[in-house]
Length: 151
Ligand code: RB5
Image (cartoon, rainbow, N blue to C red; front, top):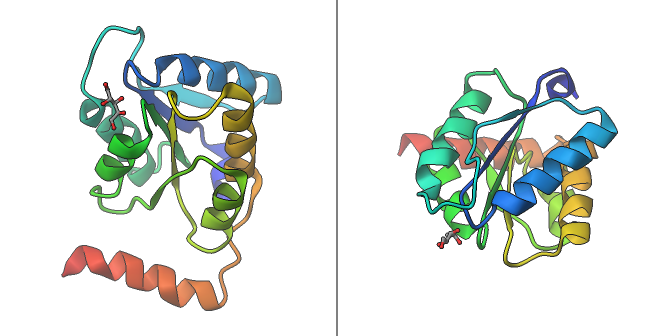
């Protein structure tokens, strides 16, 4: 994938901080570059502030894909999907992670640090990063998703 040469944008709030740190260690092991947009502790903070930093880096082309962690993953996904150019999926299972890449060309993955264990989360991360978009019949549908931004 073309995004493979650009860093993964990482962001988390306090509820996702520990998972973000685990993901960083995993990406280090795999030799995958990333940019960490924070937060940098378990002190309470507001997930929209972090989501926008990572998503803006993706839409600006500085990062290829975003991985966003909060307590549930849901708040991060709500924020990310309001940002023009972002197609975010909140995943708690590997099937969704694979198919949101294959069919939706998702460019942001949202995870709940209070929902998924570390092992499952890292398996989801790997599928999100390693699975290619299929295009074909799905391109028409992804185009329609993006057209919703202009209503
Ligand atoms: C923070 O307590 C929590 O609301 C946040 O991490 C996230 O789960 C929101 O969707």
